Image 1: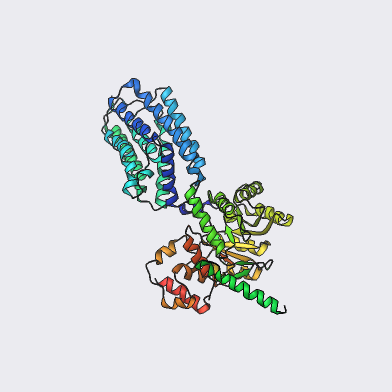
Image 2: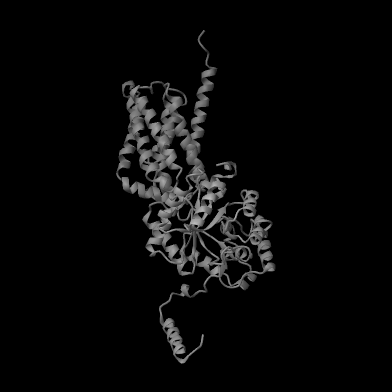
Length: 227
Length: 305
């Protein structure tokens, strides 16, 4: 399209907030009680990270990989794409993230064996994604039926992944970060365009992740290098 | 026609029978004014039904039925033109669902768009759109937002010549690329042009509307309420007393009458999810229209609020 610059985010918002939130209601109803399983998987990831057993770290990547592929297929491809044609182009990115996490699992490329000062930010982000995000729907009057649950809905899945990657180290991190970051940016932009107050959620997650990384880099540069 | 005692009797009986029919109150309202499409003189009601955002409800059965209800009220109130686009998500299959549910109303004037950057993909996309609607052919197909307009217009002119579409048009919105639109209106034999025009966004009055009148091009006005922003802005303000002269009861009707009273406008296509709003919109298409002085008064009043 030769005139992209004349378009604004509003021009690509093809659905109303009412339709968007009803999508989550019907989606949740169709999958119930799978939400309990994915939420338990999220809590299991937190426990695995907290214990820091090196041999089990690959299971974290495996759980995340399965959830990214599931959310991409079940929500983006099958549901969201019915009201937003762009979702059909974003779903493959979720499959790619899932594939990268599978590679990380096979290579045992993620480690959670070091404690760092900014770890609390990672736990804060994961805690919000698992326990805070599902509360946003009832708190805003949409009811529990429209809750966004980790491993079922894309926002808490991407947000929790960012928190988990913040606690991890490994050579695949630069490849694993861009897609959750991109999704949080797109989701925040969509919610903002819809006039939804909870647009702050993905935006705050991105800001926290950026602050934590900058903090880590600054600390690394300030620490004395070995002679 | 000669009036005989028999025809007089038949007319009287028909009138009496009609008076006894349980016709709902909203069905008794005046039918919308019609305006001719300049290229053929075919007349169409001056208020149509847009589907942008409002009909993109996905597979939600309750919302699909709600849209079908809006379409039913639209046809019942005398509406004809429904406008959609491949860009509008699930709006096309939802329109198709509504048409099927309503028994494919004969009054339908089906207005669609072609929206693809591929010069060769136009015919396949139009055919897919036709299947979604479940109609034998479209009355009007427009090049959406001037996208790859040259090859698509040629495709549409060929389709018109072959009788697979009745009218050809081109669209833009939000005041975008009016210079190019003007150039196309001057050089191409299009039947319809569609752009945004409302009581606040009046740029089209300077060149596009006079040019459409001069070139004999029908005008479809989109986003008459700035996608609801104007009605939201005015909803808590009282209607001016003088608005009663137009027989209206809402800001939406006042803003619609402002648009429809421009002589170069053929149809305005407000989009809505509500049956009461679609009836209100069609009601604005009937009754007295503002004259030039009243139009200026409306614009000045809204601007001052």
